Length: 341
Ligand code: PHE
Image 1 (cartoon, rainbow, N blue to C red):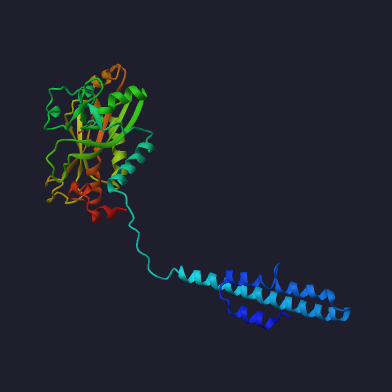
Image 2: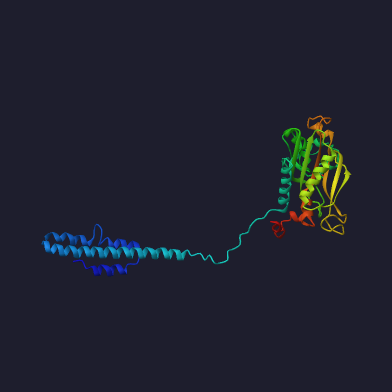
């Protein structure tokens, strides 16, 4: 007869779950040893059957219970072992993630875009590669103008499909005519973006810099409109009341033209590389749109007028954050780049 004690001893020795299941099939389920025992009961008398039946049932219960609890124990152990192996100590200091941060120029550009939206201007970034016609002639700069020379402008080897020479735009004004034609009039257009010039680099000049232009074309636009919007824009962007001066200037695409300088917030006029001890930093080029530009866009300058202004975003950012040299913006020094996020 099956000895439950031997079976239980055997069970004790087993220490992995699949082996336990396999071994216990020997005693339980289909091929169980107990089955054989039950089979022999047929030949027994009623009394013996009763006795044998209860012994075997008890053995079956004992073995099943023992097997099930052993199996539970083994699988719990398995789970615990796996947990231990994969243990993560959440109390340890983590490695800091190297997080990116916004470039200070992107932050200022976004603010300028907020101003555009607040004043209901359409924003169009234009493109950085343009034809000589777009950059110069369309905005009334004759090709004999010194700005068109190789020493002022960056030329590309390629031409556009119609054979016109391509250059990197020297100002966002290169899109004025195209945009007036594209959006129609009256128009309030903002064009932020990079521009390129063949410059001698110093604290306030770089060969690539960010600019943002405002163009308004409507009927009866006056210098008073220009001054009013200018004040609003600068007080928004500069955060604080900075002294501003307006002086007459010349740009071929405006008539009359002005320049607007802001007070140097870095040195207050004593000495600094940004304002070159002049107290003032040239920040805005502006003027009333030249009738030739309006004509080039297919409009009648007697009916339509407007103003345009361009603000140097890099200089603005330098003024705002007290940065003495605009080359910091692009020199890739991470200590600088990370300090504005
Ligand atoms: N395009 C001029 C520059 O790059 C700035 C400007 C814009 C002047 C609009 C007048 C009107 O310096």
